[in-house]
Length: 144
Image (cartoon, rainbow, N blue to C red; front, side, top):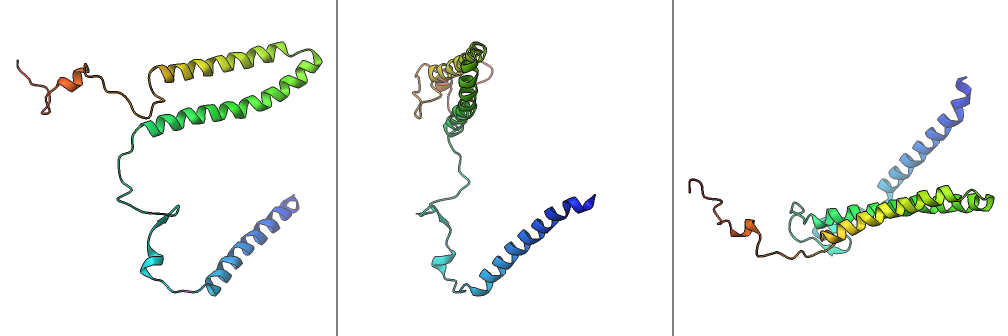
């Protein structure tokens, strides 16, 4: 019974040995000449400016979620379209077609909702009639 897993054990052992051997070989061969220039933080070809612990605008999060939503839509629609083509060839394509159209309708309504409320705009317009704007800087007054 355990003989069936022998091939898996051999591949795991050889894979681990290969990785460790290459790391050791690289450690032995590479030159060690540290300098302040080499020890600087490097990110995508741009020099670092400021701290990484800053507050990002929540728009990045919203746009990333909308992108993820439509990315998943494509991942779902491509295989569904291929299956729909096979089913349509057999004459059974109306049910899946309606399901795909309902799926697209729900996603379109979600996109319209995001667009209507301005969640897709990078720069949001600030209305002057906002009650939060009229509150003094020290906060609301109590006891009036």
